[in-house]
Image 1 (cartoon, rainbow, N blue to C red):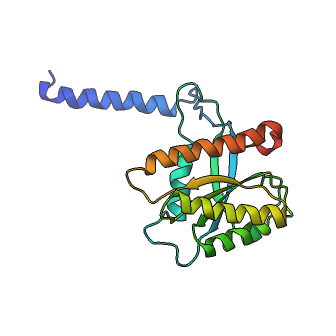
Image 2: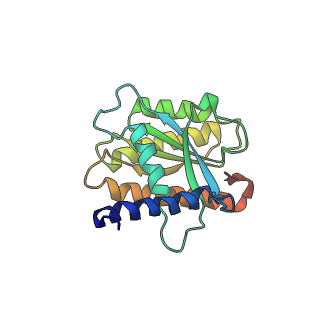
Length: 205
């Protein structure tokens, strides 16, 4: 007669044997779900001056936070395309037909405006349809909008490109979440409106 004290160990051994058989069975087929949904690719150009305030929003933080925000899935939109943000110097922007929607992140200052203009000028040979401008480091939204007006007037007059103001996003703080959510919504509207008219701009991963 077996010692009752051994029963838990014996049951554990039998359970492991069943689990092992389940995984190594030749008849067992393992299926891995692959996400085949389309992906929106958003190019990001950074026009940050050396004196970009240390307490302003930093590029890496923006890209990571915005990528997460854009990819938030809610009930009823599970089949919506995902988003992939990539940072490129404008001089190395791939001319692959996938540069229809671009986010330019700039310091809200005269030097930031000049850098942003230089970045955008180097894109003039690409078929860019939507360029959104996001500022950071401004004292308030009025300063950011004055920077935008100056940049937009220059690009329209000399480059014949129309810009879209996406606002001024401050560093992480009490209002950052709301501002990030609004920014994501504006980017979705900006890029998806273009994609509906140009299906080839949405690339499948």
